[in-house]
Amino acid sequence: DLSHELQSPLARMAIAAKLTRTAENREAVAARLQKEITRVSEMVAGLVDITRAEGDPAALRRDPVDFQETVADIVAGCEWEAGEKSVRILPEIEPATIGGNEELLRRAVENVLRNAIHYSPEGGKVEISLAVESGEAAVVVRDHGPGVPADALERIFAPFYRVEQARERDGAGGMGLGLALAQRAVLLHQGTIRAENANPGLRVTIRLHTSQ
Image (cartoon, rainbow, N blue to C red):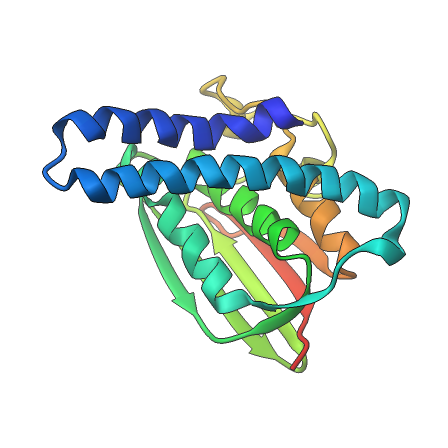
């Protein structure tokens, strides 16, 4: 799990390290590099928290989380990864407050967004929205890639499951842990996560109870 989760931030750190030698605004790049290093440390701690919380759900910290700020920060952090494929991230983010573990909530949304970027075609777009309705915050992430077979929509959240058809045609789909970890984090917060084909692409919706 850790090996899979570390791939993306380490890739962003490598890009930032290169840019520190060539970018005009080196201070900004250095700040981004430091932020990614911090994120790796937080990520490791967050994954350990998932395991501990699953063993003792009552011990899960439930602090007020400014979810609008969290999702906006996730989008900003994924811009570089999306830029490598000329993929545009189109956010529509409303204010929302969630009671829970900020790092676990972050990991859930970031894994879904990274998955959407990975399967987006070159020059494509990924839409991400956060809206509140009837006491629930809904995060919806939609890519415009190949989607998945209908009978795989539930199984994509299973650890190590890989779709063998169009969505894996480039052979670079990873080990299928990102969505599994996202589901684990969401369930720990008594939320739901669901995938559906959007024709084209895949739409993943996370629903969490707000603390407002």
